Length: 249
Image 1 (cartoon, rainbow, N blue to C red):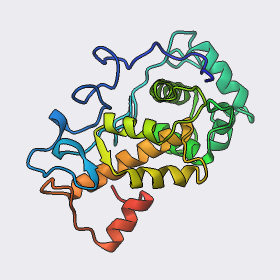
Image 2: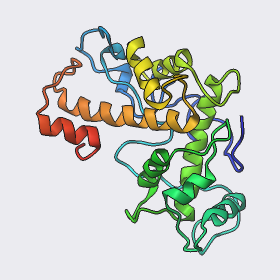
Image 3: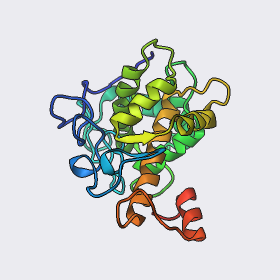
């Protein structure tokens, strides 16, 4: 599978022993403290592990902008130093030389392991996550943060992609979800894969990231409404629509 130049060393900064920090037995940060929320019944047809809700994305906490973690290199524009190779890549896709790149420009910089470009949906989502001033674009510092974030996900994807095809299948994705604390039914996971790949039901890296971030966002929204932590919540119609399209938290 193709690599990203300037990737940070394996593992997540601050994680003991590598792997997925922040969850018991190795998991993604942002998961339920102590392995779940006590008092909830065991899951039935899929749901939440250990009476709680599953985890989140490596290196990114919902509701907070990722902290700068730039690599070594010369300063860029008087800002904290950015790896020169990352700065060079940024300049290569900053076609209008504005010092900012949008989702379309970002798409030209990001490639899956099977040499397809990241989807526009994935690029818009990532711009939104790292766009501190809500301009719809990111600068080289934010691009450096995004780069490290993608590489965190990429390392976990490569652990699952045993045949180095650039795609992961249902059994591999199920294992990844279980490591994050989710217990979904096989039917649900199959339907989720079909959303991104109706025929092959496999995930490329960009869709792996998008699906996991969306699951985390929706889980957080549902959890805030599940007052008794039973895996059940009553939602008004407008609230449900707001959550689904990302207008409500």
